[in-house]
Length: 284
Image 1 (tube, one colour):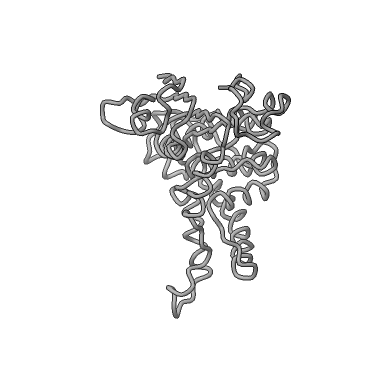
Image 2: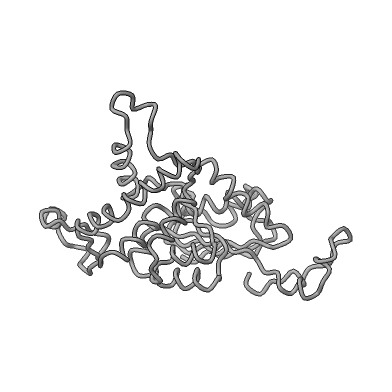
């Protein structure tokens, strides 16, 4: 996946002069799609993801809402180490939320709300006055710009123009914030006519699938940490170009329940999401 160059492939007869140039062909590498679930950002892999994005080692990122908000919240307030066995009722009474063996104080989300709501206000004004059509990836890029923190992978994605897709943007604290913000802009006399900030998911499915379709002569590789939405979204986009050329799955899911999370790469081959001759591996 990382070693492939366009120069490894035969030169087609109908290509343009640039594609025949040996230096150009040596410079063209695989297009890498990185997908991961939110727990990786919560639980210690955030810095690795930041390194990959900072150094242009991936081309497209797909994650869940938690993978977005956790990156931002960690710029605003710390997460603490706890224990998997801490009683939920006790933690609730102390305003602590458990993620595995980690603890996130309620106050972290208050700080997140104080930071993000004014940004949503600005985005709403741009929607009204400049006809900006927001998509989840555009929202994420804006948040990466606004956080302006080098510890954030979203900051580096914004800076390096690496798209970050999240079709489940409302599934988490980000959704809570969008919910709260929707009441600020609502017309109490006619709420259906003024929905507030609008985020278009159709624009992003065009953009996401386009990342695969317009890879052109490049091979595509998928690296998927975890399962669920990021795994399926990346594989489905690559179906639009008759499948990815390389695939690495790293997860703990099993295929026996019929879930996409547990499916082996060969199942994706049957759908045309990974090519039949692709190099693939699943690490349990």
